[in-house]
Length: 119
Image (cartoon, rainbow, N blue to C red; front, side):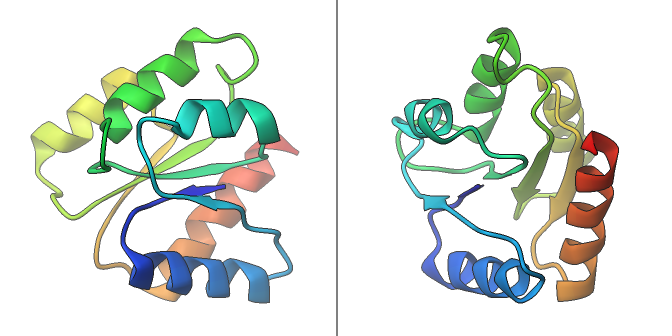
């Protein structure tokens, strides 16, 4: 599942992953993201930091507190790649962190690595 609010990034990531044979569900509202996640139980979450309604950090913290999503692999995306952002993501329980802009190859490598860890 991809939770991202920028249409161009949604389209790009969906295309990259679909071409790889993966099914991609998308959602763009931070406020209802956790409800959407509970309803679909994805194998992997790609999560933007800055979302309308609720930040990716808050969504991630809530996921880690619930038994059903505590172990879900999460790749966090941010346009701000400062050390402080990485530290916040790590404290919240992120599996991997990627700064925008990213290359298609980088995205695929991260997704493959996270998917391999859960297999």
